[in-house]
Image 1 (tube, rainbow, N blue to C red):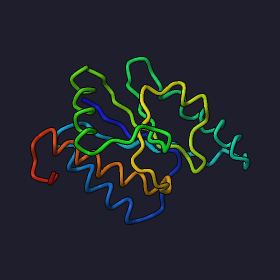
Image 2: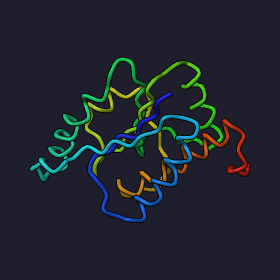
Image 3: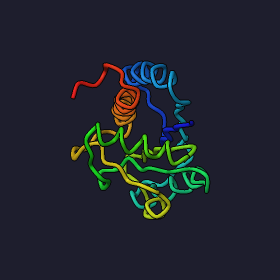
Image 4: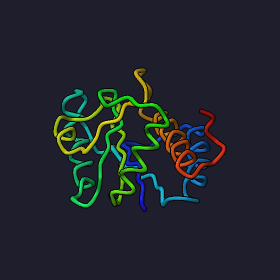
Length: 156
């Protein structure tokens, strides 16, 4: 089972890198989890709409017929950690492979990306930086994995 986190842009924040390494190791004991950073250095647009359209072109090849794609987006469905674990387990049981989670750039996703996604998930009603959300998501993914595998990490 492959689970991917696909993000626009790199992070230069050491604490984010360090935290991601911790959760990558933990999750990879159970599933093949990877993080793919898509460079946005070549995007010259400055207006939000134009930037989102350019980022959509970079993300589009990752939406394949055999993948299940989830946007991490404030417009998505908000669920509790235990429900996320149940949902993830259902996706795994249904044979979706890979399961891909997407983090957009600073302006979010273009409408074209919304139409390609299988699911939209909100991690919080609050807004986080597109860099920090990587670490928050990795922690929540590990929490879901720990619930699925009955590890002592999650305290209900």
